[in-house]
Length: 259
Image (cartoon, one colour):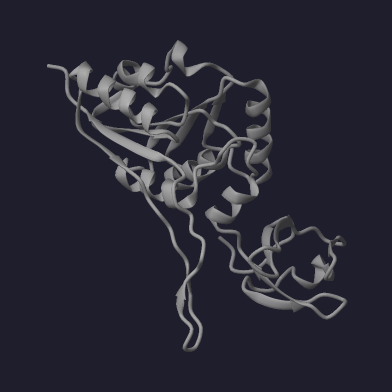
């Protein structure tokens, strides 16, 4: 990646925790907010991480957007998988450079974008979304942030079947994951991971029962991750009064070889 801001690049414009934006820099254009105007020409050719002042004198930071920044910016037409959960899914499922991953549902495309970055140019993400409006919205989001080169999108109900075989991971974020237990196993390589994200414990219970009853899965476990920010101030350091607590349960299982 270039170390300097190029014409056409995405930048993360940061004023404070509640006021920040991702914008595409274009020659001759400007960023407008109620804290003033920043000319993109004043950013092009300069390094990421600079501080600039708007025409009204307010200081902004200009950064390279992180995957978490992009994920949050994609919006929440459905509940997104938070960065704390997305990171856990990547590590527990062993998803990395070169991985081939099946995902459903696509939703806003937030997790799809995280997966796309993780698997890189040599990997691929195959994502299924039954709702046409969500499919089109996710497609727009992924195109906006340049995350489509290694993504194949289907406007299709994954319950009807997974096209891909010998994949490295299957990630499910849908209402009835227990219905995909056998199909996910057929699609996965042996000793690879199914990750299922569910907001309610009832869904988890049905999924774990289906995984156990099938006899095709081992090392079944469910995790819940909490995140709490610490406010660091001289003589007043303490946790914030709010935290990102329950967002969803993540169930993981490894596919057993069929002999």
